[in-house]
Every structure is written in C-alpha cells, then in structure tokens.
Length: 296
Ligand SMILES: [Zn+2]
Image: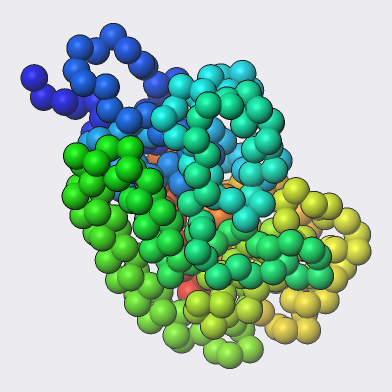
C-alpha cells in the first residue's frame, strides 16, 4: 500500500484541523510540531515523507503573543519534537513547555547572526525573513531529525540541500530585483520593523511604526515618528503585513500621503490561494511587492 497521507503539505493538514493519529497499521513516522506556519513549511520540506508536521499559531495570527489553547498543549505533548524559532519570538513558550514537559524543544535559528532591536533591549527574532539565514534553520533541523530517525538521514540531508540551493537562487533573484531601487528610496516601512535581517542582506533600510508586535503598538508618538521618517526620506510607498491590523498603516498612509503598495508576509505564510503558501513563495512575494512599490 502506498503511503500517501504524509505527503500532504503541512499547511493542508493543519487546515483540516487536528492531525489524525493512530488508526493506521503503517509504521508510525515522526510527528513534529512547530511554533508557527513558516517553520512548519521549512520543517515539512526537510522532513519530506518521514514526518507529519503541524504548527501551533494559525495563519493570519502573529506568533509573538499567541494564547495557546488546550489542543496546542496536546499537540506538543504528542509530538516527538517541538521546533521553535527562538530569539525570543515565542513569548508563550514557557506556558506550553510546562504543559508538555517530556517533549524536546529545539531552537531552529541557532547560529544566526543576531540583529538587535532598535532603541530597545533584545534581539530581532525575524531571522527567517532573509533567505540567507535559511541554511541555519535547515542545518539545525537536519541534525535533529537525523538523530531521531537515522535511517532517513540521507533524505533529510538531500531535502535540506535542495531547500538551501533554492533559497540561494532566490537570494540572487531578489538581489537583482531590488537593484533598480534608487539609493534614497531603499527603505522598507511596515507596521512591525521585522525586515532587519532582510534589509541587512539586501542593503535596504527598514523601519516600522513599532519594533515588535508584542510591545506597544500604534501610540501617537510612534505614528508621528514614522510619518516624519517617511516624509523626510520621500519614499514612494509603505507596506502592510498579513498578520497585523491594517488600520495603523492606513492611518500612516492617510497622514503622510504615501500609498500602501501591497501586503507582505512576515509572521506567517499566506492563506491558500495567496501565492505565498510556502516559505520560499512568501519571500518571493515580499521581494516583488518591495521592488514594485519602491522603484517608482
Ligand atoms: Zn513579528
């Protein structure tokens, strides 16, 4: 009998609600839970047919201040391993870990060169937003999975190499796509200043109404500051994230006279049909939206 169910993308599985477990006479593969959909896609790509992969934070919600529900505790409890980003992203992690004491928690961003937050303590957790960081995520996942399922280590390695290669090619494409943006217009403005890793790798400045979704959002002081930045710099466009209430950026746009050029994906992959359902597609989408918005 052909093994089919594990070939379904993680996102599809999650969209169907909680994953079925048991009931099959087939050999039980690994069950991996990840903290958010971006990591879910990366882990599913590396694990291939050898694991079922789930994620906790629903698409469309942000992973910083998520409120875990009882089924999340169960998911993590049942998992062989729980992959998280680390770098302080999952502020709710402790609550889950306390309820799933036996499940290993692995930080997948280990090794990334950290970028500090601006004007605040701590580091920016959004390392995945630059494709140049994907080798760290892949290598950490390959190493962990290979210990858990040594027989499949060669597959994990091959899947990981493939993803790293695709990310590298995508990096080169993005570099080219962004090359035409004039120097003074090389500034990405979003609600949460989450593109620092992306900006550092592609020589583009970044700013936001606020630094982190889990901190204060959209105060008058923050709104006035970003409007000044936008007007001083003369950027032709600003952007809004799929996981943030768009009204903040709409207000900034109205008050600065600078249009919102499009929606980008930071803290979650896109909904089905968005064209940004996978990690690589979300990065590809983001780069196109930036290139179109800022080159004018
Ligand atoms: Zn975020």
